[in-house]
Image (tube, rainbow, N blue to C red; front, side):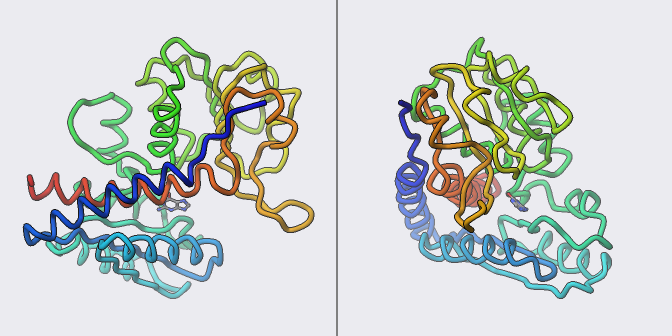
Length: 284
Ligand code: GUN
């Protein structure tokens, strides 16, 4: 039976630290500010943005949420973004993905001021991650939160075999880079692969496909660490991950639950990174 990696508990601790940090900054006259831009009516995105806003306010971070209608043009969105890029009161900018189809998401994400790029998706910050630069720069919040969980549970990475399932900008690619930088031997696979061929010998599996049953008990080696980024609804409408949790739990060494695993860590990392961007820009 696996040890459950309690993302909810770790996120709570990190949020308490963030709140303390924010209070100290406020005493020096600095209030970290996160601006989130959401375009359109995607209900899951709206839910995520509401939780980000709520958490920021709980921690004393100023939160701006700009909701733009589905028919917003790329030019109109750029105008808002440029305003935020140049507004000295805003330290961190997040444009909620996915954007409506008529907007070139890659292009828009590339226009975020790299010093305010709280997602770390901007080309300069992605490049620094890829090159394993030592300086301070933002990194995608979900993979960065996962690294904090692995560290908290003292999970060895050097020389270990890690498999990342999914190659998205938000999770798969930055996750692979962080694991490579930490000394793991990393395979990145997608839906064309036979998952088991790769995962059967893996010490660490990160699944970020958004598909039920991506990882089953037949895909996992005894004692492996299983990180489940998926947020899916099962046949009964219950929130579950990509991993067949109950059966994999019996074999794994460590496993993240859904809910209560990766999700809360993403938000808490977004908050710490907002504070970090503020500190880096103000050289506090
Ligand atoms: N949509 C789902 N997850 C994320 C995220 O981490 N950042 C952004 N910008 N959009 C998302």
